[in-house]
Image 1 (cartoon, rainbow, N blue to C red):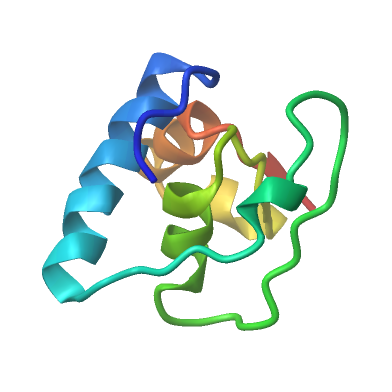
Image 2: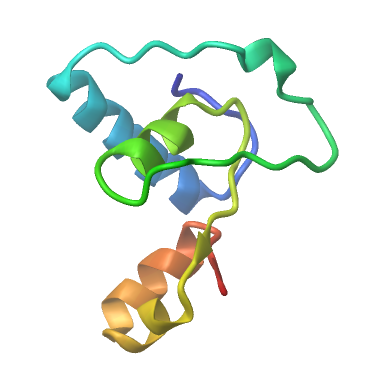
Length: 92
């Protein structure tokens, strides 16, 4: 569901690239999107730690998701640090 109006330009760019990527892999079905509040806080939980689940959450959400990422991700390399910061991630 690409086309979110909120979020940084970098987040929207990554969302679009991942939208194209997920479309190449197959059809994505989003259910329960009407339960996502338009404003305010909320918690979206992904019960898998590998695969395309994170991509699908970011592409299918009607608003920007701020992902929790393990703190070591900021120590791998400077390029990855810029990507996770730009995508709205925060260390845990």
